[in-house]
Amino acid sequence: AAAKYAQEGGGGDEAERPLKVCAEAGRKCVRQIHQHPILSDEWLQLVDSLKQLTRLVQLEGRMPANAKVAEIHGRNQETPGTLWDQEAHENAIRILVEEAKVNLCLRMMNDFKVWQYNPTDMKQSVEHCMKTYDLSQVNIEQKCRQFEEYLGQLLWRAFAHVETLQLMDIPLLIDHCGLVLQHVDATRAAGLACSSSKLEQEVLVMYYVSSLFKHAEALNNGELLAKAREVRLLPLVISHLSRHAAAEYPENISVDVAAGLAALADNEDFQTDWRSFFREPRADGRLPSLAGVLCGTDHQRRPGQEAGTAPVAGFVQQGPAGDVRGARARGAAVCCASPSRPSPKPLRPSFAKQGLSPPAHKGI
Image 1: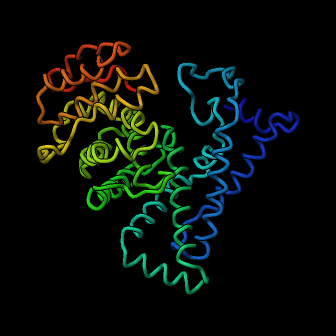
Image 2: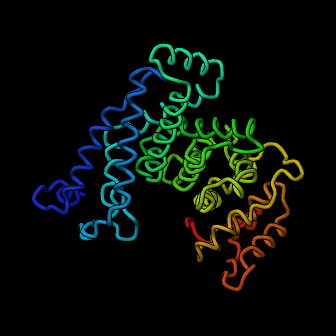
């Protein structure tokens, strides 16, 4: 990792200069992140810092990979690496983690959504802001939307890394995901009502949940699953998928969510107690087949990934009360619907006993 720091900090090589500029600008923006009352003057200024930091993240994402990182001695060549030794450039996210701001960002986002879901508090704050700062309601709504989208993207990028999650307040993260998904389940069953960018929390929390499921076994697995069970996280995720995935998800989100579900289905602690995650019997028609969502449209654009997700689709479709043989048959039908798709692998004994169809591998 030290080699990468040296490469990015060296002022003699003009090729590294943009990285150094981005890192310095990113650290300045990150250090301006503090918690302020929503719609206060400081909070409105914070939105501008989040906007600049998000643009830096997007700029780094377009930079070519750093091939020199592969030469670092002791680096695990079988993984993409960590924030400190990966080939991709994510200095802004790395600095966010180093400055211990990710938990703060999560608390800020959670407070914002609690405030937003309370119409009385929100109305009072907006009226006070309009009078105090001479802003129109349109301007205030724009600031709120920018805050949510910029901060949400930063959290999304940060949670993709297990080293970030290992430093997180996981119960708060699960509570936040549960809060948003419960709101969607209760008030937005007919549609998410999100903007064209699809960067509101009502969509992005599905990425957060997927990251939690992917990395659960590298975290405090038992406590994570217990908290997820407490807030009914898995039923809420399935409800979100069944109602909104086909028509409202951005491209590739189904792939990411399927990867998270595949990892959860392969989680040994989940395998032994998966029935407890579904406390109430599902109503008829509540969970339509998700096989097409998880293994259809998106996978036609990304061939070669069907085998790991089709069994998960079969499990999600059937739920805890489903017929095992029916789930296996439907999972196989999805895998073998076209000649280009490989045949599903046989069930492992531990799954066969419990009625689950395991993914072929943990991730996609």
